[in-house]
Length: 244
Image (cartoon, rainbow, N blue to C red; front, side):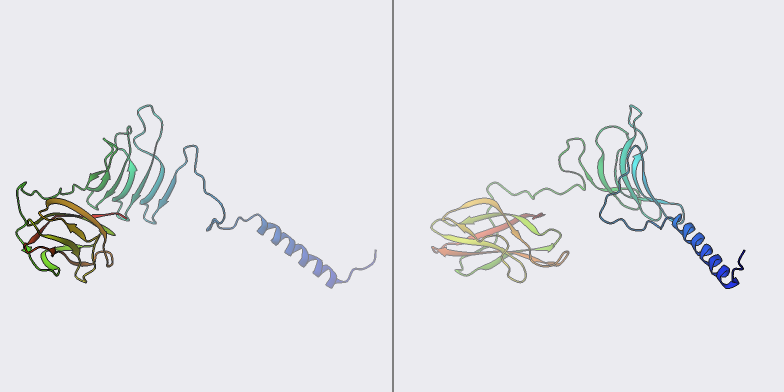
């Protein structure tokens, strides 16, 4: 048998070692840290749980306790804070009936919830209704100016993009006019409202509110006469923030 040079044997052994290394690496699955162009499906009673290093489950999607009355799994959604207090849930403690969508404060009080009994609107928070006014009441503040005059003010903190403002208005017989709602920068909120001669009525106007979220300013009801020698008055009633 011909003698094989040692340097060739060393090369072959090196290639064999590299091949074994590559074969081993092929059996190691890469870390799944990203999902691109596809979906994640959890089914057949599976659950998605996120646990903090201290062992608290802060995200829990899937089977919840208690189960339904027939023994089937209740499916829901619970988000907890790092201190393990519930922050958000779609779940029912009864295990049966509709599941409320709820936001919780850190003391365990429900601060926002939909109404699952009537399946219509909010359950919490409770909101104050419109202010009462007399059926024969006349606005206290009036003007006979032909230019807009501010008659009433109200502080406002912007939480919604628009507002719905209610008012009571009265014009003397033979006098016509206009009323409008403005902010501190004289931005008119909603349309200018025309008032016919001798009018006495209540209504509302809806308009977009300028400024950033939670900006603070005053609202102002203004009035002016457009005809006649009498006066026109306006009284602001309740004002609500509303969605777009």
